[in-house]
Length: 128
Image (cartoon, rainbow, N blue to C red; front, top):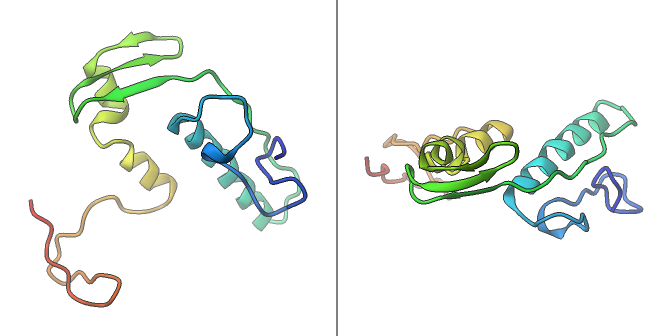
């Protein structure tokens, strides 16, 4: 794998997450940083650009939510954090909002009675 996350010998195949050979902890925080670099590089390739961004590993942070309002974290440059800070980073929505924005998707469940599943059948509304 190259420093731009490309699989060696492949210009349009990228590796990210746990399958990389980067010397860093295999954690979601690292995978999220891989996604940011790879998404920018794919966009650059689509736009005809040849210069891609190199991924630079960083020390790991640990964020352990316990439900939406609990948990603990060890954050870079901040030391240990309690449940109030932990829930701001991850506990409230387990990063679904941030990842949804990155993927340009809505993370809100559909409560519409007209919503259909992948087979075209009407879906029951989600409980509120």
